[in-house]
Length: 193
Image (cartoon, rainbow, N blue to C red; front, side):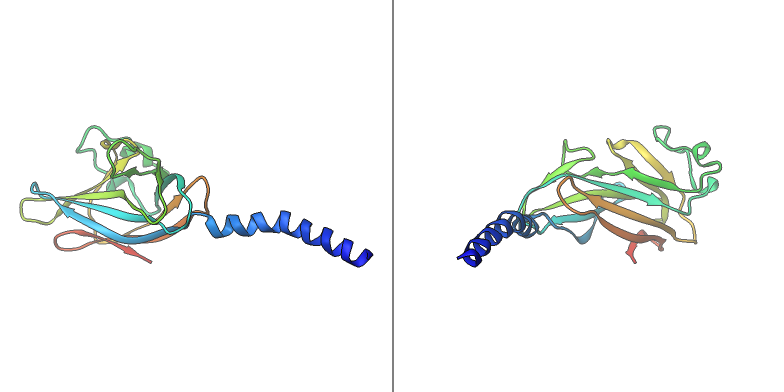
């Protein structure tokens, strides 16, 4: 008799404590980076966006993307567009851009967006302005407000820019991606490492 009472209490305890944890794990949102999207505009601008998908069973709430670039030097930053948040003076001794919020491509969402289950949203990463001969002239990163003001404008260079993108939400684990920006003849390619 005591054995069945203890077994019943133990089962009830495990069901009430462990059950919700398993259910929460099974239902939680899961961030998946599914592809890179390039859009060429008619004015010699190539937009690069990252597709972020929610492969879980619940809404991914307050999802943000942040970018860090580790090997930025003073001479890599240009002040050609006047409206940008990070200037060469900001980098005089710093040498990196760390955890700067990016902008979602969806109109009106700014730096935070909720993503429903099995839905994909686009995160603006950078755009490449081409010179008249079709070669990369400037690399511009958006701020959390969009393309104006810009976060930073970089010059293309032979040495790749190395960085990290962190995508996180209020109700899931963050996803971290390491990348390089490699200058090619007619674009700047995003390579995940």
